[in-house]
Length: 313
Image (cartoon, rainbow, N blue to C red; front, top):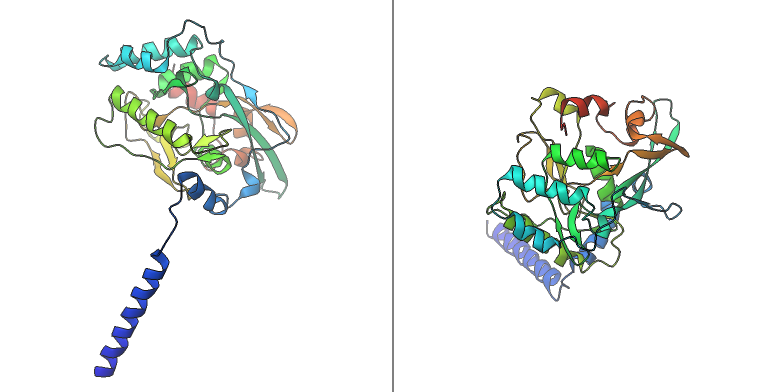
C-alpha cells in the first residue's frame, strides 16, 4: 500500500511539473496568429475550398453609393427604437439605394471541387461577398442583421443568392481572415446590440492584414432542404465557425422568419458560378445529380421551389 501511495505521489508531481513547464513563459497569441496556427486543421480539404489567385473578384450589382448617403453610425441613430417592420424598411431603402461600403461589394472567388457518382472530378467557383452586408461607408459602416424575406429582396435586386450550409463551411475554410466568434447575451434583438457587435468585429479585423474574405463573425441565413419540413414562416440559420472550423450554430429552424438578432448575418453569392470552366446558374448546378456536391451537402436542392415557398420578398 505504501509503495502504491509513493507511486501515485510521484505521478502527481510529474503531472504538476509538466503542466508548469508547458505554461511557463507561454506566448500570448493574437487572434490572427491563433487563426493561422489552426490553418491546416480548418482546411482539412484545403484543395476543395480556397481563394484562387488566377481568377478576379466580381462586383456586386448594386447602385453606386451617393455622396449624400448617411453613414453607418448615423443610420443606427435613425433606427434605434423603431418597430422591426419600420427598421427593416429603412434598411431595405438604404441597401437598394446603394448605401453600402466597399467590402461587401466585392464578390471574392472561392474554388471548390468534388467527385460525382462515376468518380469524375468537377471544379467549381462561387463568388461570395467578402464580408457581411452593411450600410454606410468605409470607416463608418454597420453590418445589418435582416429577416430572410428582406434579405431576399436585396438578393434578387442584386442578382445574388443566400448560402447553403456547405457553402457556409467552404467560405469559412477559404477565408483569409477567420475571426473568433464573440457572442453577446444581453438585449440580443436590440439595434444597440447589433451595433455593439459590429464594433467588436471592426476591432478584431484590425489585426488581420488580408481581408479578401472575412468569416467567423456571424451566423448565416441559409437555404436548406430542411425548410420543406417546416411551416413557411421559418428562417434557417447556420454557422458562426470557431477557429478550428466548428460551427457554433448547427442548422436551426426554431425561429419564425420575423426573428432577427445581433448574431445573424447576410452574405450573398452571385447566381452565376463557373463549373469546369463553363459559366452556369447556381440553381442549375444544385439540381444536377452530377454537380450538386460542389455546393450542397444535403443532396439536390431546388432553389426555385424554396424561393417560391420560403423567404418570399
